[in-house]
Length: 239
Ligand SMILES: [Zn+2]
Image (cartoon, rainbow, N blue to C red; front, side, top):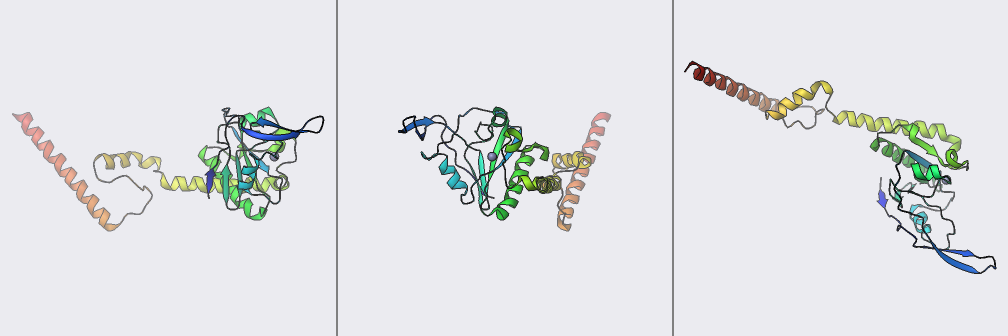
């Protein structure tokens, strides 16, 4: 899935228009990306609250002077990919609480074409959990932080959303096991590599007959060399 970094600028650079007490339009500079570092402990799920918009539109809205809310987000996803506006490990203003903004990575799940977006969101969240070695218990909601009815389309099906993420996460873990050497074979793998018998790559791949022929010959040559070394050592001892 396409994940694009399109970070918004750090600091007070975004123009925001508002009306003062006399109903005169004013412009002020605000930031939706403070640059403040946070320790990310959770993934906080939102719906974007708009049946028409898509990630690049949401990203551009963060810089639009007509947008008079300070709110921001880290990542926004739809059926064709996701855009990251604020990087992992930085504060975004998405949860309406200090705690939420300071401990979670926010994902806005687009409501347009929701049935197509849903499986992409499941996969993306599973991927982030896998990369962080986290479990599904680290996935939370805007509602859990502030009480707001968000993600409004996912809350009614939250349990199945989480179990679908878990299925994807388990698949990723299985793939990892497929490419990892089993603990009982690690010592032999190292011996094969140290002695030039095998490169030690692709531990779970099948071996061909010609590969066995070459490895047999290498083991034989190694044994022969060891035997000769042993004889030489004994002769030297006798001297
Ligand atoms: Zn929300």
